[in-house]
Image (cartoon, rainbow, N blue to C red; front, side, top):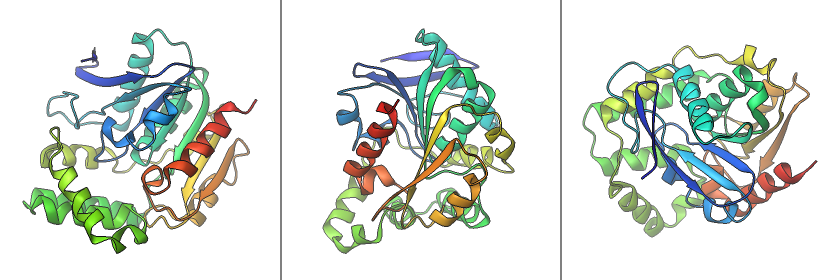
Length: 265
């Protein structure tokens, strides 16, 4: 299994496909397996580098406090380890925040940037949701109840019309062999507190696509449009009938939008 020792952590990553490299950074409470709905298709034309962030999946990072910049430094170390001078970068939710930090602090390393359902800072509502979900885990809520609560925030409403599909998704999540602990969820939650990356937007030189879910409860479309409206390199595109997890709700539309953007001159 591919691991990289960097910055006091043992960073696990997947490396799949051929073509220009695309680094894909998962969101809060998610690891590299979260890209499963889209990675096989994207790997037909791209080399996909999919790490597990600190405090989740197969990455081992002890119990120390995590800062957002720690995640970014891990990704740069991984890019260096793979001998890549520059890459395209995709981040989902918390992964989008990490991607902003990378593209702002190391602008010469990023060719194109894609931010999925992510903003330079979290609104009060999304902060409350993340804190509440973390507190549920810490209080020992049964996994079935916790996943059902999580899914209600990140998936499109029509997903819940098929109760068998919901039950199957919960059962699948509960069987995950590298499920995040409550303590590590708290570490990730705390790493986002007080983060405001708005100043980083001024230093990003890469053309940037912001993908917004039409029905995202955590980062509403209007809010994302407002966050990036003053920055001409940032273009917001809406994925219809999608909530916070765009690449799960609408994988085909997501792949199409990503491919068009990356392949454009």
